[in-house]
Image (cartoon, rainbow, N blue to C red; front, top):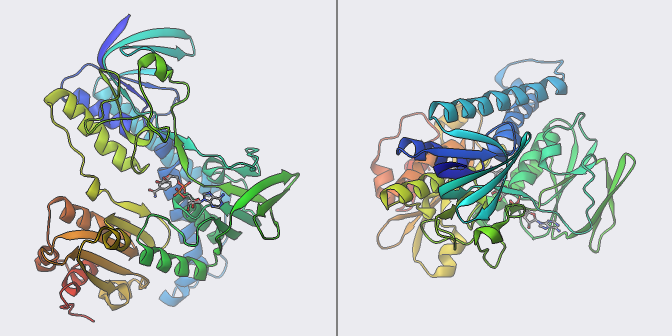
Length: 461
Ligand code: NAI
């Protein structure tokens, strides 16, 4: 039987990062992945293809509408959806191949098949050509998550489906129902709305983007509604059914809505079924996730878990941090993730990005804070590129001035938030941000101004 120092189950961002880090630290590493293409949900059917389509659809919407203001006349803008989808697929293929070459370069043994536990140190791998058993000194579960279903909603994989289907509709839906106003609903709803669909987003709560700073979410709601996304808040979807080409979405206390496609985006659940966790002695927590301690150790000795299968936000970069920290912990005895400095980004237009605590969390926990806010409308670069919607909000401790949270809605907010994450990671004060030189003219100057504004010293407003 083949044995390895570290066997990683899953080659998503968490799993492949852990495998590479293990190899860098001198371990003999193997990685088991059931799909032929590496990179997990994120690369194959998540973050990357959705960002490719978001970019293409944004360019299309701009060409149809806003370019005129720049003096660019494009009277006959056409959509070639097939080509748009092919480009997206090329992006995915090049990146998944890139991961395969990283695995090879780092001399990680790759197994293509499904893994399940035989014992805490033994795995069964079901490969196309038969079964094999592997022994691991350490086994890391990075099996990711899958789409959560909704009672009453019949997935048919065609008319009623998940983000996977919504990344590849062969034609622009006339009417698209999106169930859930979270990350996926807003991103993919935006894609198809820009390409010409009438999109209605049904959300159970009375707000969009639960968990994000409320002021940010409210601003996003207004901006996205102005772009043409229709929102039905406080709407509990009880059923969705397809009959031929038509779908019906039923909402508690309201009349049914007819459409030709339904995207269900009500969250994801950890991939714990099929791993035979009982045989591995791996226990779940009260919410069905693999229970781990601060070092990502499960209830079974030598077995670890990271990413979407454990607690915390289901984000690729959170899984990456955990993957590296877990393996560093195994080899060096120390590995740490600062969960206060993990950003969240929704790649709509404008982008919505957050790191640290929201205003609601600060109020609820009784932490005294100061708030600085700066609108992009007062930023020179934003004006020059005609991206004046949105603002930056900096929240710092009232006494120590330590930055506790930064929330941005605006163009390239997903890139801008990196500065704020570094500030939080380094325990910076808003004064530290305010005194750092920010190149002019850049969108990042809005962060400096918002930091100044916590002390009533913003210069350009
Ligand atoms: P989500 O958790 O972000 O949002 C789900 C929404 O559905 C919530 O607002 C919830 O209140 C609503 N909902 C639940 N039941 C409902 C019902 N019966 N009727 C109407 N609304 C209902 O989940 P989503 O968008 O599916 O994304 C899944 C995961 O994928 C998220 O945890 C996110 O972290 C990750 N993701 C991250 C992205 C990014 O980083 N940009 C992009 C896409 C996904």
